[in-house]
Image (cartoon, rainbow, N blue to C red; front, side, top):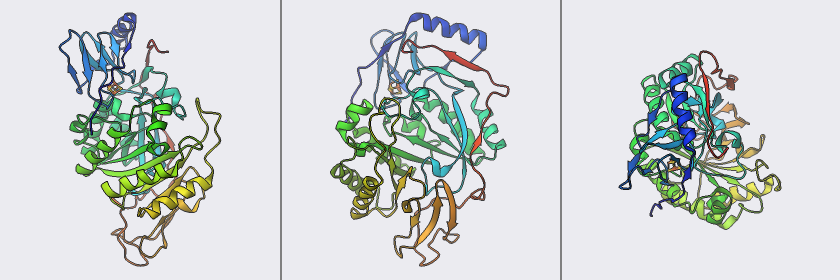
Length: 396
Ligand code: SF4
């Protein structure tokens, strides 16, 4: 499987760079050189190696994600230490059902994204290519997470690979305090990114869209092909990073059952039949307001295909109250974890995560959190003692 080099670059106005330098002086925010990039032979040009786009960026240009800028021949992560969104969520919201169930996860995002999904629910932070956020250093962020009683970090809401150096520094400190680290990612990562990920990442939920259909991804996401996602999954598996798979099923344009079967078959053969898989309901958003929400029957057909192919743990997402929110024992068929939305309402596993009815070992990493029956949605206030900064990019 080969990685293609994207020729796509965006030229930014030199005045933006000047403005940034001024802001740096006035507001004192850190100018963080990226780790994942190479200098090219052509004077001042660089190649970003953080994600599978591999942007070639000219002097005073930026990558497709809008947050990695070439300033004077060096690549900078402009959103290092700038958090645009922070919230405590139940881990089940990611969605992640088999890793530290019932825990409270401190979820953060920066601006920018390496994909351009036309249905993005978080488009206001991911697609406007702004550099902005609350200025907060990794150690303070970890302290805040501990103060709020969080049990781990989720790098989510936008694609975390684009801010990998920041996630890495937060993740290393978080681990020292016993917190876990997980990515909610599109999986469009570079091989090089695993040099950093292996130091701190414990789990990932990897989001396919439209059953991973290359035609869908070209048209609605803006990538050439999904091959790097499969490569990333193999890298994660090799490094013992816990994996769950999601698939956003988009009606009419991204719901082909043959394609779904192909995707599930790959998961079974390469990651194993114990891999949890979620089929998510699409709802109209951003630039795709003309399609309806995914019919529940379509999602149920996907479940049937996944089970026929041998997957043991399959879920329907974004349909609260559906029977496929629960975890069923693959051996006796009884409900071992009953859920309502993101809440756990019944737990039928013993202390070794075995089915209480028949003893079958359920693929779960970590114990049920003592927070499982608490209200786990907690707003995080970053405005206390932090500054908000914003730098306009030319794409706005
Ligand atoms: S992280 Fe951003 S700049 Fe780097 S290759 Fe990906 S899209 Fe391009």
